[in-house]
Image (cartoon, rainbow over all chains, first blue to last red; front, side, top):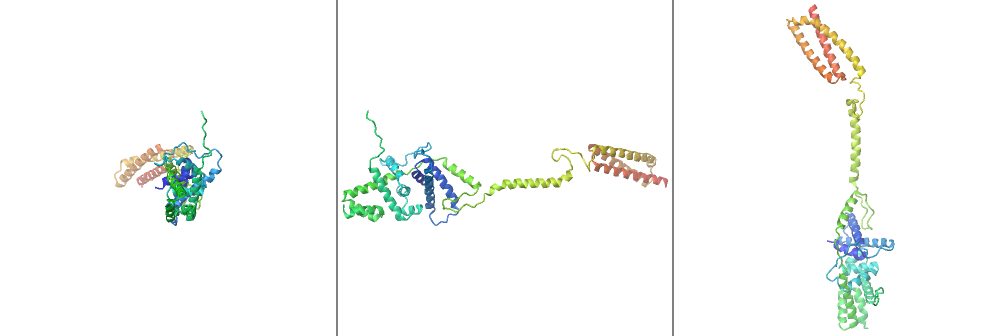
Length: 162
Length: 227
């Protein structure tokens, strides 16, 4: 039930399928180990997404230590099928690249709220931040995305005239 | 830009439904705020397309394999503070070791217990020379030589007693004759068993005992003849 959402969060936070699957696998192991001692002071679903997000943060930290050459497009040879009927939205590709530029906390809030549909209360528990901070992060993330999407792409390829 | 325009950012940041509703009402008359709201709404609609799913047939087998492997391995470090360290013992790991140790101890004790009754026969596939209660070849030759002489002396005594036993008429002599027949039968049977295992001193002792009894019986027959 939670697995598709976990995979989606991991892919959006990490940017490629291989890392996302590794993170989901690692998260499941952590959840399995911790489930016996889960204290029930938070919703189980909130807790498992917290594990997923923290695992992705760990993966991002490890990625910084990786040698250059590993790209976000490294999908281990697998293709991601179109996710939804609105996948042909003109903003989608540009938005995907812009989201990847966001600060990890802002990116997490944006993805959890706008993509995965969590409330600010749930996001606050998942990320361990105050609910007001979640709202602020979302607003900041959307403002940045709006600005980046409105600006002309600096890396826009130029085709040579015939 | 009006005060309401300046409050639009705060309204969008707060995310409160009531405040946003007020901002939307203001946007109906303010083109700039309407564009900002439309941009935010467009962003939200586009964001929905970022939700991704893909088939990962290898993921679940890998997770299952990891869980199985982990259940046999010592506890790993904690998961980012979300759980205390796993303290469950990997109990299946010591079972083969305990089984081997138990097998070794049982084998050793069994060997020590049963070795005397087995003698020095092929315990470890090495045939050793037989000792008591079995005989060596040299000892056997001596024993057989003594037995032959002993048996010969008894048979001589039997030949002497034979006429008296053949003419037996009293119940006592008939009883002696019958007893001697039984003893001869036992001697024949023991000789047959000894032929199959010449080194068995137990059988030889039995045979000598029967011969001694025959000797004693013959003496009593002869003693009766002289009295």
